[in-house]
Length: 268
Image (cartoon, rainbow, N blue to C red):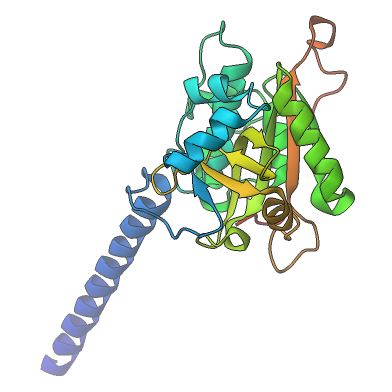
């Protein structure tokens, strides 16, 4: 009898310990993915130039393709969760496109009809693929052209970027793998704010503001970063979107877009 009681006490102690470990792990995971990321400088590359340096400011002053910079800078928001680079980029861009409307934030962004109620939770762990990102912008009545890097050429991308950054009413947003730029490995989405022809560099207005400043990167390096697959299990690459507002004639989409969280390989 005493032996059985001792075994029961040990069993209860083990169960209690396992429960404590499980709860601690759940809290840690929740803090990592669901709370605002801590401010901490990320790994930088000597091939990038921070906008906060004298050289970075000189490139911006010399650029003749920077009309998008003021609007993006005025409405810029950093991502509120580790995997919210897509929502932060979308909110920044949509608010810059329609400054006369009530601004979106990273909570109201998910109020569009084609997000389900669990979208913020799911995206906190998976992030967004390029296609899901494009669909999220369309869900907010934006006109979106999406291009996978594997379906285009670098020269074409450079031309698109230069034209876009010299014209008003549209924005260029990129999906790339940070590791190729010498930064901490991670898939990422951010807007492009300017192009400097003399050095063939683009200014990424990085929405991971908790660890990276806006940086100038070469077109070649960014193209290689966009040409990376979503993950090792797929050959589908990253790429870019050009986004503008629908005209009044196109205010209602011709057909209902698919769910923003339709099946897609994990993006991180």
